[in-house]
Structures are given as structure tokens and as C-alpha cells.
Image 1: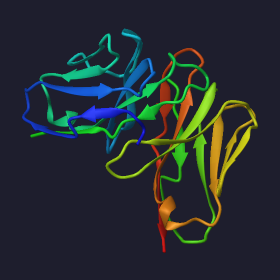
Image 2 (image 1 turned 90 degrees about the horizontal axis):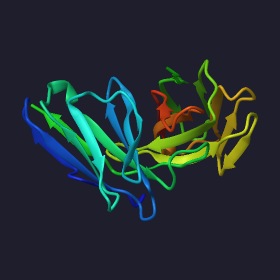
Image 3 (image 1 turned 90 degrees about the vertical axis):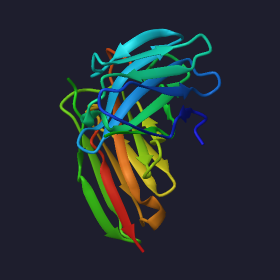
Image 4 (image 1 turned 45 degrees about the vertical axis):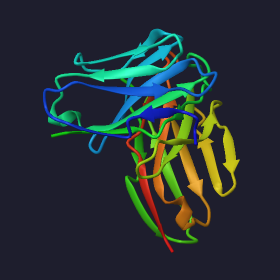
Length: 115
Length: 111
């Protein structure tokens, strides 16, 4: 158990819908990272928040957005869902904002299926 | 954009055999991490290497960071069925806080 929690574990929805994925980082960690993992794309970095502020952005679609709240939990919002958005979404957390040896600890993931 | 290529993509071996997984890039990374992921679970960090030429050992696993910090290898001695999983390398960039992940090596160790 990494100490990072994600809800829900599974999510099934239809195209065009909007969903929210939730992540609680390890106690004491200030950074939250979101990743998308699909069979043909591997693990892709989406976005990072540090202490409530956006720190780094990856290949995140405009239909996707995220935020980190004062209690440091984070939400990833996916809207106008398409079939290709079906994937595993992981949240990771780390102590600091990212450094040479900053270790990231991953949650169990949310499996999103868009029908 | 920095890319990490892992090889081989798939590896099926018999229990007791040795194996090496490679992680290569044309770019320099400030750090290199190795993760193992099992089906339905998140990646679990195995090791972080930060110095060119660095070698770290974790029981039967040996990790090496290339001298130029562009490549890394993971060597497993006397593989066991419990080593089965997806092995991912991830590079930390000097200029950002992102981790760039390789495509992974799927290892199956047959009893």
C-alpha cells in the first residue's frame, strides 16, 4: 500500500459524458501527479500540482482539467468523453515539487471505460 | 521531447535464468527510476539512480545508470515467478518536474 488513494476504482460511462476522478496523496506529500495509461500509449504524464498550484503540464487534452484543493487532495475532470479516453488513470504523489531524486508513489488507479 | 525506449518489449523465461532489460535515450536525464507494475495495480518504485555510472543492488536485482546518464539497465539474477510483471523505467528531466516513462518490458517467469 503506497498510501495514495484513488476513487472510484472503476468507472463506466458513455461518450459525451463528464467524470471526476479523485486522488488523496500520501500524508505529508505536497505534489500530486496525474498519468494516463493505455495499452498502446504506455504511461503518459498529464499534469502536476504542487501545494495547490499547477507545476508542470504534459500531453493533457483541453477537455481534461485538474485542480488541487487546500487539503491537498486532487481531482481530474474529464469531459466530452470519447471512446479513446478509456484507460487507466493513475495519481502519484511526492514530498516536494520535483527534484532530481524526488520519488513518486502511485495510487491503485481508476479504470475508465467509455462506451 | 525526450523519449525512453525499453527493450525487449516482452520476455518469457524459465525460473532460474538471468535477464537484462535496457532503457535507452538520446537525451540526458537528471535521474532514472525503475518501477514494477502488476496487473490492475499502480507502478511501485524499485530504485532511483542519479549519478552517471551508479550501480545499485536490490537483492537479485542490479540497476546501472550509464556514464552519460542517457541509458540504464536492470539485471535480474536467478529469476523467480514472483518477478513477473511490467518493468518501467522513468527519466527525470533537468528542466522540468516531469517523469518521462518508457514503454515498459513485460516479463513472464515460468515455474
